[in-house]
Image (cartoon, rainbow, N blue to C red; front, side, top):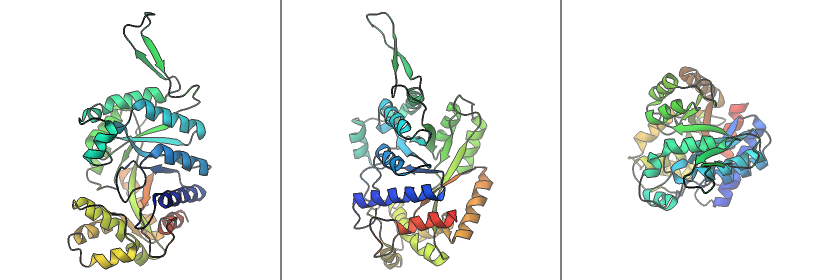
Amino acid sequence: MRAGQSSAQAISASLDLVQRADALGYRRYWFAEHHNMPAVASTTPPVLTAAAAARTQRIRVGSGGVMLPNHSPLVVAEQFAALEAIAPGRIDLGIGRAPGSDPVITQLLRMSGTTSDVDRFPDHIRDILALASPDGATLRLTGRPSGDDRYTVHATPAAGGSPELWLLGSSDYSAQLAAAFGLPYVFANHFTGEGLERALGLYRQAFQPSEHLDAPRTFLTANAVVADTAAEADERMLPQARMMARLRGGRPLTALETVEQSADAEGSDHLAAPLIDALRRRWFVGDAGSVRERLDAFAATHGVDEIMISPVAGAYDGEPLDAASGRTRTLELLAA
């Protein structure tokens, strides 16, 4: 969210962006789960996914991701089964195990002060896989008067299909877990990129074919800012880069600055300068030709068919609050 922007305006801008992505031929658009963060309006991926599905025709939409320890697996399965019924063949269920917020919010979400839900993450994945299938999950209950201890639970009656499940992560653990379950894997390279090659290697080496997937399947995420000129792209990357610098420096998060506000502050913020320079090198920032070439090379280097970009272009003073002009332009230029 930008400074001065309401949640309604931020969500409207995101829904406009997914419509444009749909028209431009992009493959998928995901919503994250973050709580109590001034710069992020995406708190409920299923709700935003439903809104996006209603406004698009072709593109896959979903979560990137639902933080499963925060939720009942049955509720998540029901939500995404309903979404699959609304938009058949277009729903992705990306799941992760990070809290998506601070310890206070985590406790409020889970109604617990323990980490037991994180520890049970593999069990919850198993539950989701069973519940999301058209056949449902069969449980065994003891002490039933009928003597039949089997109990079947369906996420939705008469399901015609299942959402596509992706496991998200940025660690050896997540890669090995996705491999063990035979699930597609997304490495969250847009965070720091640390451990990328090792995680992909572990995933591919340990992958076990399953009813969901015959062979390893993965894609990477990347932050991208594309503009008509490299100079403009460099300006538009500053607000997001400064926010990341504050986050990693343990400073309070605020709504995103405008480009002008970031430029004014950059010269005096000596703590942020080294990290911003590092992000400038690691992110995909520039004109369309140079960024497209770098993305293609990045995909080829790591043997993936798909890169999911997070278009993080900031806004100039005076740009409409209910639109994301820089982010829209990033998508348009890359698709041209």
